[in-house]
Length: 80
Image (cartoon, rainbow, N blue to C red; front, side, top):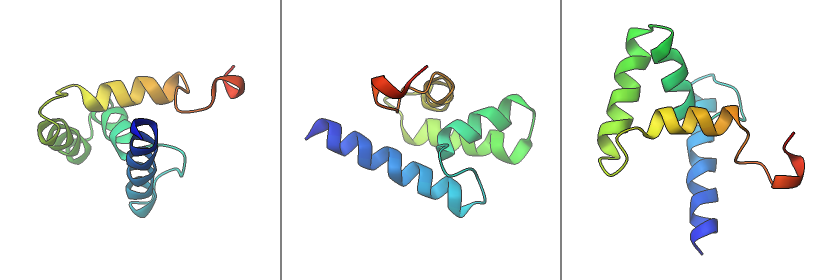
């Protein structure tokens, strides 16, 4: 059940990113962090808001970016 809930949360995060004209396989959290690092003000605010909403994980967006970069959402046999 826990794995299903996490997969659903990731899918919803990816859908939110696509609805905002992002890449279909990247989460909004990852994109927000990536753009915050690049200095985009709106995305910096968005990343801060996401991290704030998830008060139990204040570095959520940075961790999501690292997870995307390392392809940790993919099944182990599909990772390089």
